[in-house]
Image (cartoon, rainbow, N blue to C red; front, top):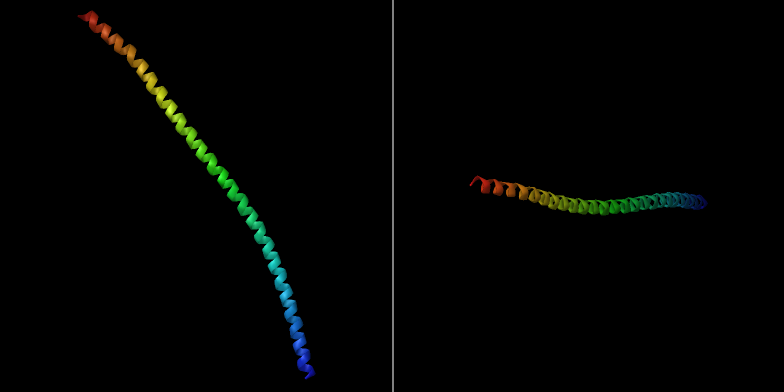
Length: 95
């Protein structure tokens, strides 16, 4: 009977050691997971900032395209007016 008790006590000690070791490993994993969560959070923040910058740059490009288009139309129209005036004057003097 004493041998059985000793075996049970030895088994309990072994189980306790195993549980302690597993708890230590879990604690270490929790620390690693927290570190990864922090890194992922930082990456998410960076991506969010990049998305905002991309949107802002897209809006700036759209505004610049609009401006260039308006300026081009203005310059084309401005160049057409003198050409048209010259054409009208040439036709008037030819008659």
